[in-house]
Image (cartoon, rainbow, N blue to C red; front, side, top):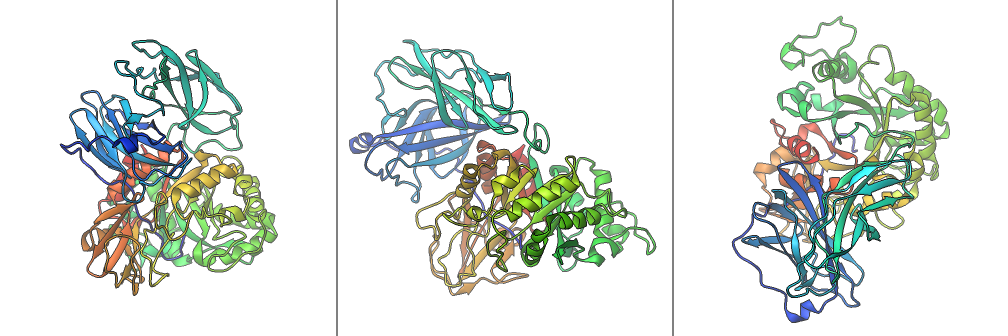
Length: 608
């Protein structure tokens, strides 16, 4: 996190069904070898999240794609992202965006949507051909969706799945079992035992049937499985983390108090708060701002309790206000975050003696004056064995050693977390340190999936600072959320220990003439507190979003160009995060939201 700022951009474009159907693919398109796979990523009773993945299984590039399917009456698409979705009756068509139509051989692209109703897709076509890569057999219907699997016999490394059989007019041949959207086995029975899993890890399973003509039907509903064991347990059984950063300096110029969490309605919609920041200096954890932290007295109208502080009370400041907040909302857990952009230079000395550092942090967090306020510690090191405001050369094992020492000191019941880079580029910051080795000691990582691009590149090109996925023309490959999460998981970090990051601000340029990303600029756009950055609550009216790219909103107003998250793009990101099995979401930071907390509400709704 930046010290004094941090924020992001967004993801799902609202596309209401249109009363028109894009025509079927041309014969040339139909000859292209491709598959389309559907996954039901989430279900909240009155609606659901869905995702289609289009894969080029041929030997030449695909220049465009169209996916078609039927929904039963009463089931519909209500919003979509990364595809233009239209309908004619119960028949639905999705066409690629300008930035994701080309698919190289062996590559794939995905688009998602939110839906209403309870039905599953059928009669799928990709560019006019069968979605499973075969041909559609005239007069032979595809099989129905199997029943949602049930899980039993869950161990550290295995789970048994069982499901109700699908039906087909000519008979079911076999079933594909999908783990996290990928086929792991094909079986002829209605049960399967998946082995070789990782302890203490979240998985999602679905099943699809294949008939005697090798036509595949729609996938079943998903069942979530959490294997036993592991060093740490999920943060809250059966729920996702919804965490916001509260900055100690926000009570000054921004006039954002802890009480605003109550009046905005945000306190009722979150699970955790990171209080930012404590300092890291001389190899120790230290107070960041003593006056804001525990000395400032608040008036009755500024106080969570409605009672004014007195000059001689044992604890005042933000710490006392957080104590009053916890009394009002006992479910909220609070962590003290140390470091940040400005104070990360102190971690090099801390890493030289992790045990002494952990002892100092424990003694400060557990100080008798405020020990009841904090439920754990968060480490925001920007960046271990890489460069941020300063460069660190502590080695790839330093971060793991620090987190191991903190876990040993704080014990198994405390929360120990860390903010991490989202640099998914080859040889980038994720590759520079052993995040997988350290993950056994943490409850979760706050992956800072924002600030990929900004007006520090004063002449551009303009680019969304928080792209969910890559797109044609992205300035740096790997600088997007999907690539970062994939790299963490490939390294060995469990998906359930990764939180997606949302920024409550935008980043922008001035001197821009074109609407679309990739334009030139003359410098950073003006901001209230800093050039090139502005709160969402300001931008939503001063420069409303005019388009989306890679799951991110952008706006061109006058000569300024901004990118930022909106409630609808956040809904898309939350749906994607749940489909990936991530542990939840976090955001930087509360004061960028509207007075009624509309971005927090979007995270809460999307992650519930």
